[in-house]
Length: 344
Image (tube, helix red, strand yellow):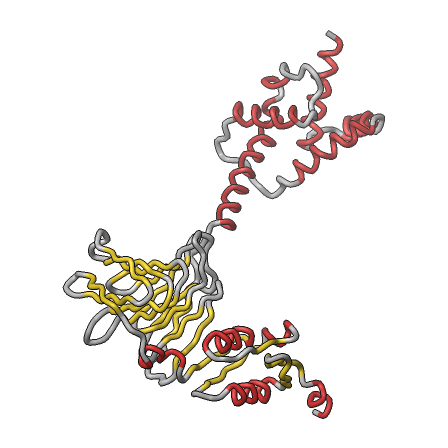
């Protein structure tokens, strides 16, 4: 009996202490009792921190007192912050402690809302590129390393960063796509008429001219599906071409010629990192550019190449970015031009 009475007394003291309802004498005696045991000190400090974190919040107008106290009691009991045999105290001291429980519930709700707001996945920010009457082919390297060659009078939209499970872009006009393979993350191109699904390939898409939609595959394979009739789709492989005619997909053989290589001519890079530029050059021409330092590769450059030779392209890059080049084992090695930097 004595043990139960002491437990109830401790619970009452604890309730009054946390709620600030102790007299000066009671507060002095309570803190003196706490100081006797290091374990008591640690337990009280934990509870004080929980209470302190709730300052500035007001309890709900009509809190469920019983439910609130039950939640608080369970939480303190799980952390071994309550003495033994404290069940009897629940109803007796509920008016004193209900504010603590109610505020904890409010904080839990607020925390959940804040968490959801912070972690809510916002739609990917789209970048829109409009080439208008630009005579040159604008070249963009996407977040995944895929390279898009955008023809004049075209509108291409893509996210700054692809989401975890998809790579979705939009095209109006004409573009050549050189897509990095990723079986777990299909590349989807949306046009006015069709959806084009890609796993890893290179192909040309034309969406607007007198002949309507047309696509030819240089390598790999793509799947073309009519938006108006998703049941109608065609798998297109290298050397094949598809067009649309009266809501039908028509497939035929395709032989690449000089005209189909338009994307390699008049190449324009706008504010692109040098590493992306030389990657495209190495991919399309008989060149092997190598960068010696990562810092050089992230430098941005706006430049147009119009049928220049490898030597002319090298000279243009070096002059613009203050670099020097060396031919080493058949590769053009680009590095910092430190001598010229010192002279300036």
